[in-house]
Amino acid sequence: MPASDEAEVIDRIASARCLELAIEEVAHLSWADEVTASGDGGKGSVGTLTLVIDTTGKPGPRLVIDSIVGNPVLSPGERGVYDSPLTITGDQPSQRVPIPVKPTRCDAHAFGESGSFNAFAFNVHVDGEPGQFVLRLGPTGSVNAIDYAVASCGFLTSIGGGEG
Image 1: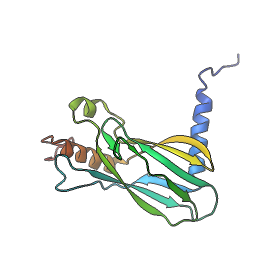
Image 2: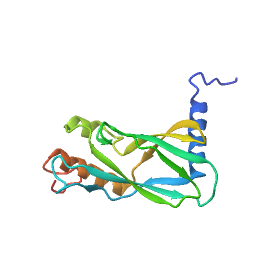
Image 3: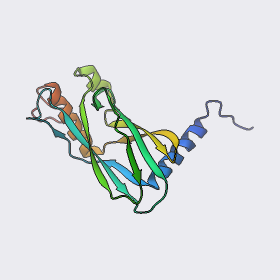
């Protein structure tokens, strides 16, 4: 008996994977592990995540990162969205781009319920075709990001158990 895909799950998964592969033709994107903070890193500080853009070294498609969207714990840019279009081609030098972040909300619910605090949605165009993909912090970067948010919110102890 043939199966149907009324919700178009297969199409969405295939489309997402095709976008990831198209991006990889230009550059490998990742987050650096370090998270820095302004001032003493305490209450009200602004953090910085670093987007690592490791280009392929080959000409080809053009990747434009239109914006980066935050999550319930961390917000890039001024209002939860980093709107500074980056145009990348594979034959450009690799680069590291600082992305300012602030805590989105400083309440226990935001921290306790956000399993996606380390995920950021990227709105992009690859050779003019729009798409969105999610780029997650690695394990070390995730710990550093949550420790920054805890300190910036003024909580006394961090999630990782250290002093905030």
